[in-house]
Image 1 (cartoon, rainbow, N blue to C red):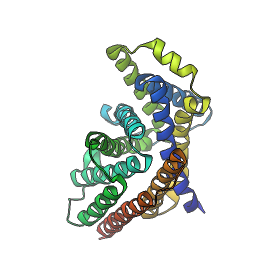
Image 2: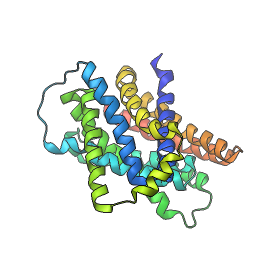
Image 3: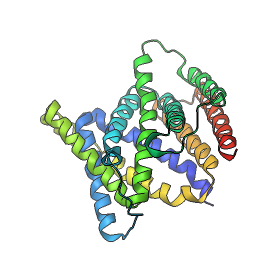
Image 4: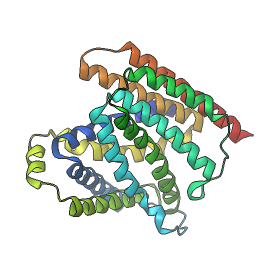
Length: 291
């Protein structure tokens, strides 16, 4: 039963990134970060206040609380990628970044994770994903910088997820998410002090922004925390990976179709090739883990 909800969670993730990118285009990146983190922090504060939750109580080094700092980078890169590239291409590159980030985390044993040395098994999936991205992109001219940012937007969550998962075990899922949003908001306020964005322009943009874009990203972020906590422990990791990717990628294609008023068979074909690459990588990774 839980399996059918995993692609929906992946689709919500893509939708969240799209909402955040629209908000950033209206009010600017810095103000959008404040709004996203403030909304998420307010909702999580209410949840933590009324929902008793206990973790293992293990004390962790301070840097495990830096997931919110990395999360700010994730939101910024996603805003740029989704605001400048087609949603399907941004998603495909982010998925490739997630794969590469996971390989780095596994091969280095980053932040206490179990170490799995890099092997040639990862290469076929990566190569197939690159073919799919080439099909989706069509022309790469003048977009390499933006595509690199989209790739980074997938690498960063692999790092923050590693931090947050460890913190979640020690503090509890919602408490760790609260720390994530609190650190993210503090990081954003520091950016405000450094960059000193024009508040008048941001306020003017906010006045013309729909409520769904103002609160949607922050609310969906909290929903993502709750959904992954409820669903993911109940199904095999391989199916989680593949179905999550499928939901993200296919939602990207649908968003492009709605935005442009026409459906692109090329983008769908490229997306399916990327998913095939992810499938190969996940299957080989499962064999490695079992062995």
